[in-house]
Length: 508
Image (cartoon, rainbow, N blue to C red; front, top):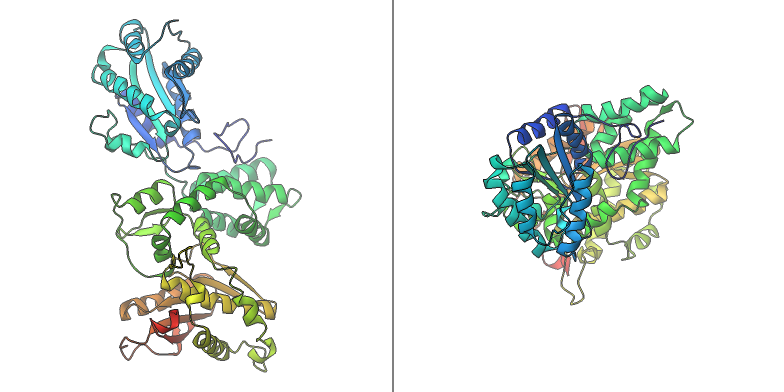
């Protein structure tokens, strides 16, 4: 029986596998046009599965394919390189000469001795090769590229994650950036198709909501799609239908327990650009996507951010966004415990059992006035803030809510993909759900836009109530439509609350 693969390339006889015929044809067309091109994308995008399928397609067309993996060869010598090359050529039924002491020898062998067939190099994990050695290798490839009509090496395909961008940008390189072959994430339909393979082979079904949630939280990243599906199946092997509660348990595991080497790399990069990441998490600032900006280049090539439909930066995979939010949260400041000791949950409910939201927010305002927001911002060893002010505002409110929810026996969780502002919490208190968004005031246009987006998403979730909490710096003048109150927006009851604060004093 096949299964969902969570590591390395897919083998169709063992793993549920998608054949992306249009993408394979694109690669084939480039090779048949004697193009030397790149495939670069973040990890877990399905690059290995793709080029293994492309290799088979090329072989069926009469090409000899030498596949070389350079992972963990940072200290390799030419002798080591030639051994790797020898094994790869042997798999392509080509015997290298015994004496291969330089790249010139390799070039001469390809140029003058291989004439009976068409050869393709696929070079994977190029970041792992010795930099100096790789430079010499590229020089050899460049010379072969210019005379490719005269010898057997018809195409070279470089596959990597990040360093390959510099290779493509190098004027001396034969790899033109316009001929990078993009291996995109799955579409919603492709994710559903992959899961449907399991349904057909086992008769175990995924609820439609589960399939959509997997697409939402993973952004259809192939590795994560397979990971979520694998966990769901492994944990529920005897169930005929995998339901939404099964999904929530797997999501919680991914967010709180899973040791994920790909997220570890994401976190390393995010910490290097923390203020930039927090501006995406906690502000409405629109940041134009410009690949020459170092933070954008690094975070994009590692799969954390992408360009949205308006040309601005957005988070790419909601799962990563959720985990980063939790990583940066100030878990050790003791405020949740301090707040919990002051809350008597019964006081916050009306006689009919409804939550008294006005009282809850008034209590939060009083707390914020007493404590300020500085304690919710991280500092470095020199005592300088490493996080932005907006982070302190949002974390303050979320900590208060978390303490309240704990005292009521309720639940709070972050929706995977609201498309809203930066705090998109769902609260479940005594069986009633509503969505909460907290944000800083930046202007009336953003204020109204946020309110309408909140109502729209609440409606999408089938909710009738939403809380819109806006932090308002007291040095600004607000137009009359910015007020606290209850409105019905597109059929959703939106309760707006304003929290005044002082930009200087409340962050001391």
